[in-house]
Length: 252
Image 1: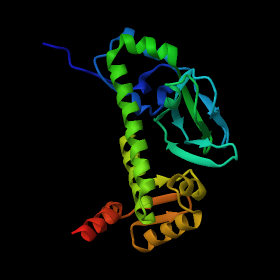
Image 2 (image 1 turned 90 degrees about the vertical axis):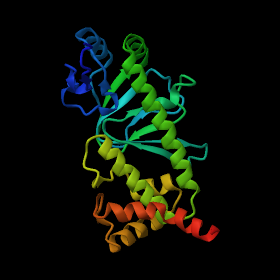
Image 3 (image 1 turned 90 degrees about the horizontal axis):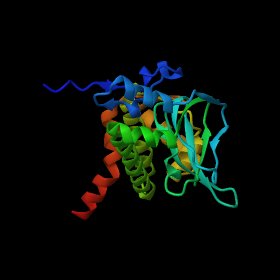
């Protein structure tokens, strides 16, 4: 009889990751002690970033992937005039740094939104381990694929005309990510500023503030500065589909 597969979570590692929520690299695989040691050896001790500190900048050489152990970050690009476009927000347990895989240097920048702890995965070491532990390689490919899907979804949201649908989709996506990382999807901590949210969605900050107020009046949310509680996930899901449904009605 084949041995029962075990679930390897990186919080089993013996280093400072003993209390870390690295759910992105939980591996549904039969992992022996030797493989655990190999994976353990790839994880460097955590590093701390104060709010506003840079994890990497555009043009920096690619040496490692990073896992957000605690706190949160934003990744963005900036033109010569200094205009910023935020690409993504990164939560505890999520991996960051995939932008450099193609060219071996980062094409975006990553900045801490709050005091954050980062685990470093040196890529050369990680490649050696993935060649020896196929389950780890498959999981990394899944994570990279999901990053691509998220980018496509963001482009779709940016192209929609209804600001309310953009905001609702952003909040629902954030709630889904919380749940995937085994956190309460109804209680969101928005470490990013209203300006950051507006930039990410292609809106103006006044519109973002107005939408929060409107959704609160509708009974969808309860907003207390950076804390947002989703009271009616069904109504929030309906707002995500509102623009699509109205377009279908117009076409019929």
